[in-house]
Image (cartoon, rainbow over all chains, first blue to last red; front, side, top):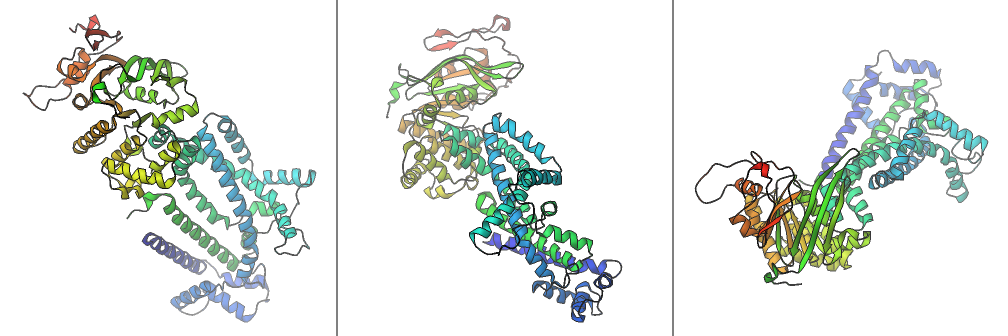
Length: 325
Length: 311
């Protein structure tokens, strides 16, 4: 418990540092971002919106500490201003409308890639020199080495255009009423297959190789030989003794990847015209949409921190050696 | 399963190793680690196997449990346990044979426990796999075993890193006797421990052996420890046995120059001080011939004439 509180404190400080950086960056930027944005938005803004933007970017005349306190208050209450590129939608609304799809796409493909990749790695290391071990890694690395957009477009062309098995774009058929109906969920799943599959294909090789290599090192440990000498069943040695120890590094990288899922998958979103945060971020950069950029950065940082915190807690459950003191 | 000490020297043997050859094979060449080694271990007997690092002691131990991995390969000979051919066992038979018939305490018992499982879970594994006991019954028996090696049963819930080196080693010994095997292989069980803990553990093994009556294959390079514990012993050099006899006989009158060198490598605790000679300073062995019986029960490999060493 004390461990968790200490970690929590650490993440709190990290988050605070990140808000502070976010506060300072526009204030250090040369020129006046707000005037540039005003010029782009061509007087469509309400005076009070301009005021809040000025506050957000520090182009007001109050002392800096007052601005800082106000800023933190704004961030904590979710007031991140109005998006310029999607005027006049508030930043929080823009992010909220996209993040669900990003988490669905990124989460599903990450979980599939990590679970299947790790299982294949375990199997490859267990039967070293076997079919899984000698055949799959080169194949997966080969596939993973294609430029992602090429692979995605090839998949789209083959399965979408030529064979017509999967839809070409969007997250669900337009005109379908979103809701928890079987028809809608099935449609969403159908649209998810190709984008998720391409991400899985390019990332699975890394998971498999990583797991295979740690697992080979673990297999040479004395406790594996002892487990064999104990006459345990092979499956039990493989999972409870070998893989259980070899999975620890994989858990860490899974946590990291989980956090970055929130950053979106830009290329996937572009190729499959799939909604998501990645494309929003690109649009924000192109449109000098500072409020949206800041909002997205904060969201990504928060997600990475939360994912890492969860992994920390999980790690304590998984590795008793971390639990001491 | 209780066997009296008097069976020592009788013709009932638990384990018979005949002309065992183990090679480490690579694409270009094969190195013979164990060369035509033969020995028997009687029921209830403690048989010692001595020799320097790399002479093939541990390879023999691993061959008996068939734990050798590529590139090690049993190239010839036979291993018979209680009349059964160990080398001919199929996977399932072998799995049951391990730990039920022969258990082993490894050289590095410190590392032979799974760091992410409690001691209890690792002991329960043995009972649930081999004896088919329920988890509750297995835990009860595991607690008894820990008491047998004088560890607080509350330690069942501990993880290996929470125990001291000596406790870990004792826990492994408790695991080794869990199924009352007829042969226990001790592969340098105390090498990583300090002398005090070493003493405790050896005393404990002796007690357990007296109580449960299993045979022991005791592997070490510590000659004094071995002479103290074993009934009969063999000395190995470069994969071959150079001398075998009752431990007392070897202690009193080592015949082979290598045995003498090995004995001289340890300072005696009593008696006048004398300079020690290192191993291999003046003795190198090429082709070691087969053993010859010099006195009843005392077999020695004739030293190569080129050495000029007298027997």
